[in-house]
Length: 195
Image 1 (tube, one colour):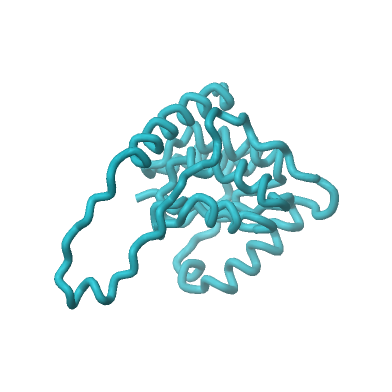
Image 2 (tube, helix red, strand yellow):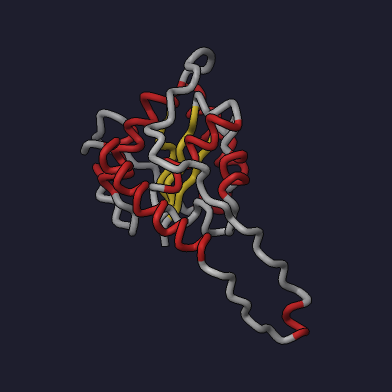
């Protein structure tokens, strides 16, 4: 897959939708007073701050942690923090040359664009030292040895996350783009899920 070409095309579709949404007047939905008192309005999402496709996010500084060591450490922490997810899991050996190929090699059947996702995972392995840690239901968890370190890097990287079409990115919970990008700074775990 020509990842750069596919993402540039997907960026144009995303940008058109973003501009339509920003140009449309807000629609007020009347709610009963007793319900409205308990609902906080969603913060308006300005979307990605790019007027044109910025290209793939540049590789992070690769000095420091070994990606495989980071994967072991992040998996141990994830498993400790999520015993309810781990208890129902099964260990599987997957015949794949790279961890990025695991979802395709195991025939992962979700609403994710599998070819695009695996291409992104391969690219992220090269640029950010990622490793696929776990596939649980419709969620994939990825360790990141060299995450974005600055706000500018994170804003750029967040765009690639948005273009995965993962429901966990910005949609659920609804997170404004700048806030989602800020959450990527120094984050050693990325998780994506699809309905």
